[in-house]
Image (cartoon, rainbow, N blue to C red; front, side, top):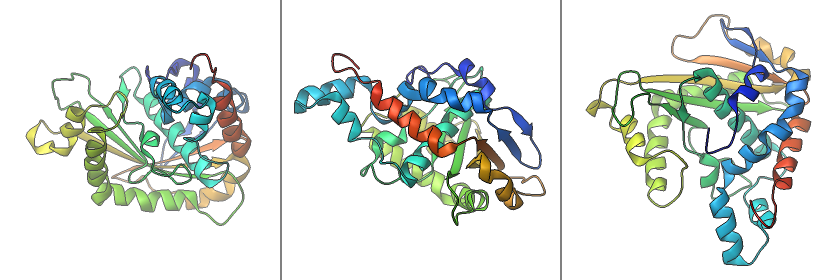
Length: 268
């Protein structure tokens, strides 16, 4: 989280657990969600581009940094909503594991098309307490994330559960190999190829834990109607997490607008 310049202590109160079984239910307080635009503006920007890359690409092209950043960010709509949900889950993982340090690739930097979601598993992160030495305490965190900010036909809870199964059966393995290939030529942030190999070549090391989550991030005015899709018994191979966010559409649009406002043409 150091790379993103986010203070986890500022976000702890954003995710109070109303219940933990048979699924996790979190209702984000309105005052906390209202503070996200300010708290997340710089971390959100750094999920898409490093300060150094922003500066270098501006110098290389002769274009203002605000334009370089805008070419990375999604347009308002479903992709922006989905990206915000994934980044929120990325931060939630870190909060849940605190005080352990969570590291993970910033997949949003690897998009081929800013108008579409990043491919493969949505959120992949690692807890490696004795790194560079591998241990049985090593953990991989993988979440499938669905976001619903406006009334429509999607069923984020059941869809997240169904797609989480894809992660558990095959997609996570493909994701890790894809990330390793991309890391050879692009910046994944603090994640290294050796760390990816820790989980790709799992048989070469002490057994590591894998934790899977199906995460549904839903606007607070819609969440009660969606909870009928939540499990009535606790799943054995994954955790279902439902996060209710007041005025979710306004919150994510405000956060992305604030991200653009963090740019100073004299410095990132």
